[in-house]
Length: 302
Image 1 (spheres, rainbow, N blue to C red):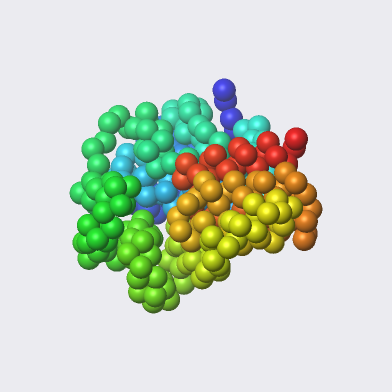
Image 2 (tube, one colour):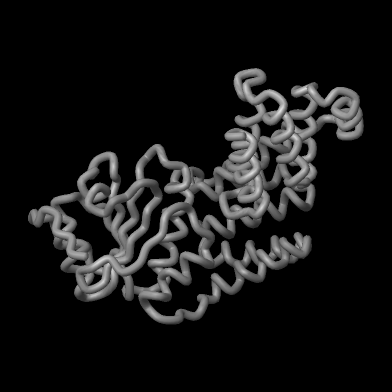
């Protein structure tokens, strides 16, 4: 498949810069011609696209880890619709890999870091994890095993080497929350600069703290109210918040799905809005989020 879009005279990428914003005029030089030297990943996004903001930092991190074996360009489809049309893009985020002037691979939608790494390795060959990546994997495993003190210690070690590593900062905050030290997590977040504060992984932790603050209801009393009157939407939503604060994610989602099934438009779709807030707090790759989105789709369109 040949793709030729305006040649223009855009400046060449800065030496060593793995990521660059590209326009239609620069596509020929920055993607097609550049891919004759090494693969180029094209990330099509838009400012209004939430999954795009989640995917972008993960993708950029993976590209940077190749140390120049792969380059990456970002294209805002609101400003450059011609490229999206030429590539027949119907949904974003949409990611394409170009090699030797041709699109050779791609995917649509937010993806977990492991799949992004596999996508890039199809272009570069196997790449071993960096020491930081290995440490983050160990910390994630410790979190999964509920060894929160160990996870916190590993995240702190990573931050000593990379203070602005969003995975480490977010992970440390989640470990602190699990240890009952939510105020320490809140103070850590408040000390971050604006750029890191806006990272989707950090925003997700902030939302988790908000849910924690909102979820102080008496769980047993709320369960009794819902059992007595299943159409008490307010009680269901409060119970969902209590479950979320207790990290009972599936139970929290199920309460909101039940409310939506009974009356989706209650209080200006309050259950759906709360559910979307849960998805943001849990993160796009969390199993509870994936299962919850499927349940929401089934309930909403049934």
